[in-house]
Image (cartoon, rainbow, N blue to C red; front, side, top):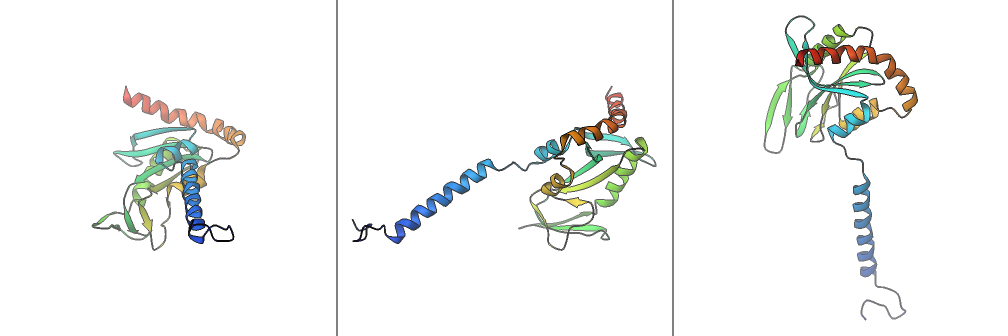
Length: 192
């Protein structure tokens, strides 16, 4: 019984082992109870209705595609999704943004101007409803030099647009529903 000291106490390494096992069990339980942070779960949390892959006329000419149009208690929300892995270097004034990953580096056009065009196109259809947009970078992206305007993470999207008071939110949604139905009718008409 080398594990037990002469006075009946357990040796320090056994206590450390037990503490380590308890910590691992606690972390596993905590992880299992954690709310999943997927795009679908966040949109489900904030949306009272949604349309995915919407194509509508641009404000000037042509058509524009919207990843997600979401009806929230704050109005209509356009969600553009960027799934990149690595450090993202971009700002409001930069024309091109850069992603530097472990073994790769690539650039893409600043997504903000396209988002402004999408917001303008939806506002042209529903003039009396607040319309805003967010560019959501999924969990693989990090902004090391600050987060540009209209850009957020999944957690940021949830915290900004989730409604705790569902009764108050439903009253707001009822005011937005005729305008939402106007967009929905356009989608139904285009798919016919």
